[in-house]
Length: 119
Image (cartoon, rainbow, N blue to C red):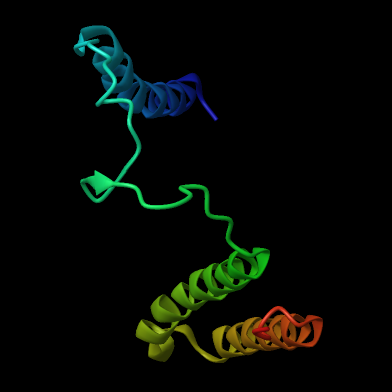
């Protein structure tokens, strides 16, 4: 890679770091700082909380959500392949078959581990 290409990569990373950082820092520096008792109070949907505000979720929710996200992201890879199926040929069909078989193996594994069982 040439120096010119590395310059664009460095510029991309610099902008990727600066674009979210500048508004956050500007908001902290320029925003009003008038803390009071009402602003520091915990609320739910604009009303005062009722009962304990600390609610613990079971770890099973997170495992189920993680399995969903993994398979949902993998499913996104199927759409471009399906749109270009006629142009890709037999090799792409073989690759996607292997990909789907790996997903099925992963699904069977998570099922046998009990990640999809709701207790």
